[in-house]
Image 1 (cartoon, rainbow, N blue to C red):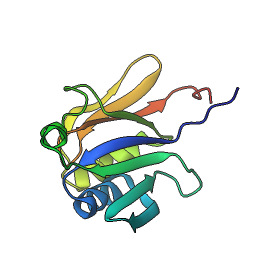
Image 2 (image 1 turned 135 degrees about the vertical axis):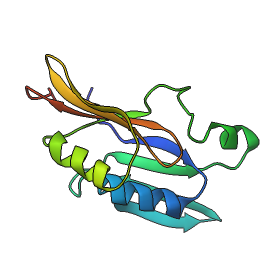
Image 3 (image 1 turned 180 degrees about the vertical axis):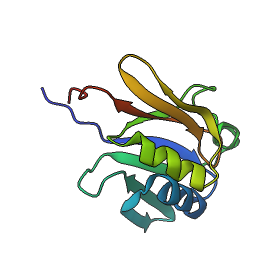
Length: 133
């Protein structure tokens, strides 16, 4: 049996402000953006050739609204791997993005943590050896 990662869902207050942040910060592109029966479906891709990514869901219920920015109770929402963390680190600094944990290093990787516009923690990791796919 074969599985492939699809999307992580992120609760948002506003589709367009969330897209603007993720586009500016992580260079995300719209993979899928349609409105059907009054509901918008906005999926983002981290790489143009990758169908996995992020699916925004607009918070509608009071419970969902309370969880925007805190879907994971203070733990990281997602981990994104890169091959150039120095470039991303500088980009985040240039964009005045608050780093929760500045660029650090351990035996296997280099990593940093930052918050998205709602306060969700995102981890960027550059492995010193290739990550198994």
